[in-house]
Length: 254
Image 1: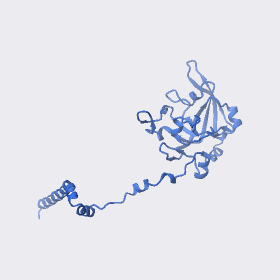
Image 2: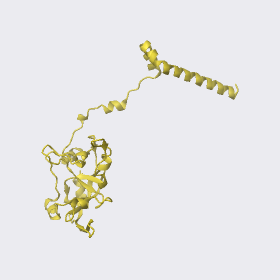
Image 3: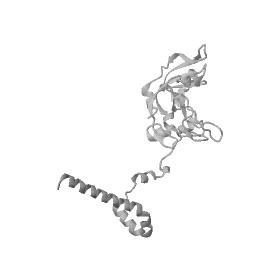
Image 4: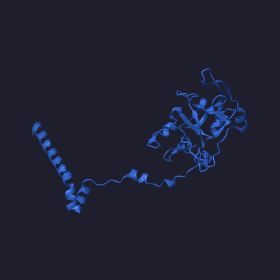
C-alpha cells in the first residue's frame, strides 16, 4: 500500500467516526425519549460517569469547623493568630512584619503604663476582616472588630495613613514582628454595596489589619505628629522604645 493510499484510508475512517458521533449527538433527544433505558445503557457504556471528588469534598458541613471570636483562644488552640475572610474562611497572617499605627488618644506614657497598645475589648468580639473595614457594630451600636489598622508607611501616597489617623498632636507607633493581614487583597470584590459587591472602600490607605492588643515588646518606636506650614502632617522626630524585643514579641503569637 502506498503512502497516499494509507492516508486516504485514515481520512475515511476519521470521517466515518465523526459521522457516528454527529448522529448520536443530534438524535440523542428523540432516541432517548423513545427508548430511554436502551439509550442510557449505550451512553453509559461509551462514556461511564466519574465520581466528582471535588463536589463531594465541598459538600462537607461548615459547622464542623470551630469558630473563634477571641484571638488568644485561637492562638492557644491553633498555634497561630487568625482572621476570617469575607466568606468565613480562616486566614493565617500574610506576614509577621512592620507597620504604622496612628492614635490621637494613646500617648507613649499611657502605652508604657499599659504594657503596650491595649486590647479594644469589644463586648461582641469579631475576628472578621469584613467587620473590621466596614466598622460593624453590635446591637448596642458598639464596634465589634478585634483588629487595628496599620499602614506600610506613615503617610500613603494619597495623603492618608497612620499620620492622618493620629492627626496633629497625636502619635504614630511603629510596630514590628506582628501578624498582619492585607485587607485589600482578602476583601477584593467582597464588600457589599447598595448596587454591587466591591472592594474595601478605604483601599487607598493600603491597610494591614493587626491584633488590637500590641505588647510593648512589639513597638519599635513612636513619634508625635506635627503640621507643616502648608498644613501637611508628618512625624519629624522618632523616639526609640527601649523595651522593644523581637524575640519576646514573637512569643505572643505562638
